Image 1: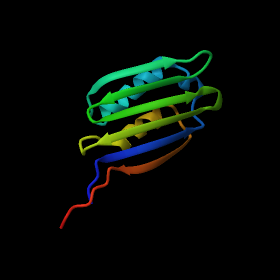
Image 2: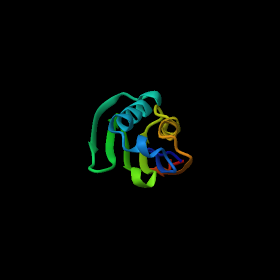
Image 3: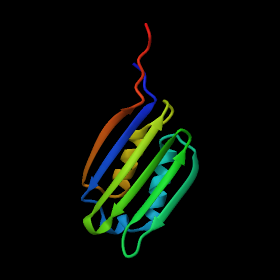
Image 4: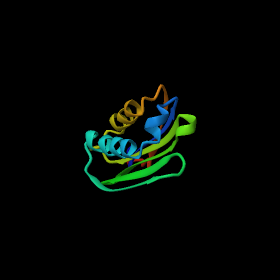
Length: 119
């Protein structure tokens, strides 16, 4: 069985509230997560909400990383999609978990585009 890729859904609870609301920190963490896991950033878009929160997406070849933060709750939802084998989504997830000082992370992994080989 082959697949197109893997998608990780991160539930990041009990994070540092100040970091979750820090636009530059969230943006730099996402870009670092993409780069450290072996991807070249193609594009990025981030937005700072008023009064609280940051949302953003980083596009990489055949993949993306996205995040939405709720600083008042110490919570962030992140999504890491990878197509192909050149990208380590778990490395990217660990970068985000550590950079946001997350004390209660959970990761759900979904295989995307599973294909069955004809034998």
